[in-house]
Image: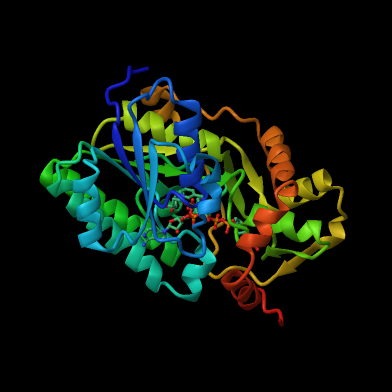
Length: 349
Ligand code: NAD
Ligand code: DAU
């Protein structure tokens, strides 16, 4: 394993009020205060439906943290933030992240995920940022059959408007490394689970529904496979890539935990002590990728990283978190999300 090559100091985190970004900021300020004593974090977040400042309530008053509400596509704002805050490191979490929404309307996906990344890259290049980390996804590789794993060499073959926009952003990052010798790293991770995930995604949605004895809408035959990783393992991986990764490289992260959606749903119902009769098979997601599975041996070899959280332990802990944070769920489920839910699952009211 390599030693630390890089210590971030003035860090711009985009999309830090979302699921993974907020877990990452909390991890840095609560678990790494000794090894990163100098770090200052500026969180630039547009606060879309998925961005919730409540996710960071415990660290709001930390003198090393500040939040700016703003859009990564706003080049004037981004330039000022980089200059004023003397940013040396950018981690780009900001994105439209939900596949189903990208099928309903891809416009914000192209704007934020592609144009936003381009704005950040140009500004970071002009301001001589020392390291730029693009948080990407295994979905850029497309879908696997029964065998095999995605490696960093797997050709990009995105299938949804969401994954196409993430792949486009990855290619922009790659081109800046190649053309301008720009110091960027790309990480690609599988499906995250854990606290503070917006309840449009499978796990928090099914926990919230089961708790209210509402049906769990499983798409298609339920046999699609995802590789689940605890968000804390993903966050450790991002920090490891930032500190020990090589510029111009891609690093995959996965949880080594492949599960069919139906098996995951049954496990969840067992933990919640709810009947299987809550499961309802619904129309499949158009273009639904069948299987994702990650080979993360490069991250193990070069970053000394491997997933640590046992899935069943992590799942039980995650369920317990949602059950004891009903107020958080009620807040994020209000307003726009209700309309989206009714449209997606065709319900009245
Ligand atoms: P999320 O939807 O929970 O959060 C996205 C955040 O970005 C929100 O706070 C939102 O307000 C902010 N945002 C959106 N558009 C913005 C804009 N134009 N300017 C500034 N902020 C904006 O997403 P997440 O699940 O936390 O994912 C974070 C990143 O990780 C994304 O880039 C996603 O593609 C990637 N990723 C997610 C997973 C996963 O399982 N959730 C897995 C691999 C990679
Ligand atoms: O693989 C990484 C990706 O994981 C990230 O890049 C995305 O940002 C993140 O949203 C996630 O994408 P998925 O589409 O895999 O996640 P989602 O939670 O939407 O769905 C997980 C699986 O569950 C998928 O096979 C679709 C299925 N599903 C989902 C929902 C919301 C259902 O069967 N029913 C549902 O209601």
